[in-house]
Image (tube, rainbow, N blue to C red; front, side, top):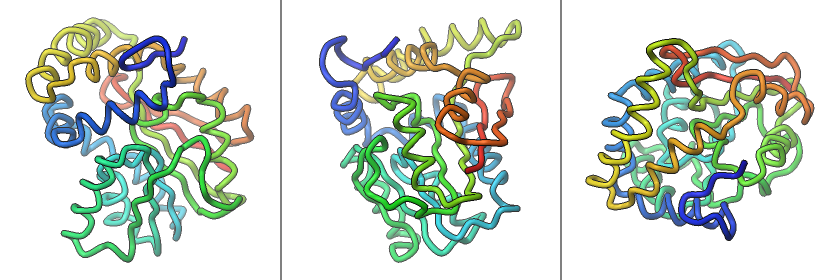
Length: 240
């Protein structure tokens, strides 16, 4: 089932771009509020999985305002990180954050489609994505593109929301994401559809072993997932 932010008709990709352009000004603040600040720890744990591999070039897919790219640079010290996103407004905010830290030469922010990456095959040592792959219009095509631009032996690390399965976290998660989160989003972002979409997109996403199958189908090997915070999200990994 394909879930879209605004309308069942029309391109999901176009709607996702419009949605993130709309919520960009409040996106970082809302992330901290809505996840109770835990999202920063999730990113740190995901990046930690790459430390032993020492990637020198990293592609951060669906980079948004660049939080994951900045954290990756801080912890991994690569030569180059390229963050790509389809939202112009999110990228502009990310560029300001990067400039403020004096990292313009080390981190590029590029407007690009995750399912049609403008890079040659084997361009990067690692590919990362945080809370973005469930927004792909064609999930398998997007993951296949991630695979294509990785060097042989390169690693992919994906952080994504999952559906808790254990009581009472499953029930609390559903109540919070389905009822509380859209109200906060409506007050703060003026786009309640975006936060209604968040819940629906998480419900529709093929998580855990189902997502590993997507990764394996496009060629990734040594695939695994690791649950975080009682199943609220997971780290997925694979190797080319």
